[in-house]
Image (tube, rainbow, N blue to C red):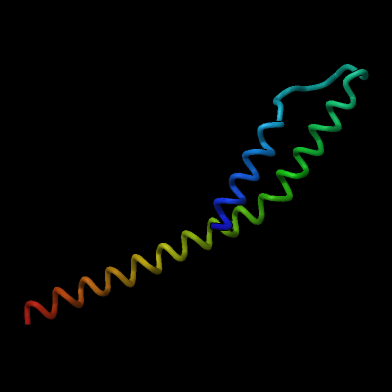
Length: 79
């Protein structure tokens, strides 16, 4: 649940991100805004990665437990 919320927040912040290079001094405000957006995205990245790895690990544990139960059930029916 937390991972989904983090991904949604990251996507909303990422909507404001532009792939532009501001060379005109008159557009310095846009450049500062883009730097702020990138800063927010970089700040969220470790949390997104941590929760994604945690979700993947939990999925692996669940798959292992289910697999073990299936093997045990198959061995019990053959005996």
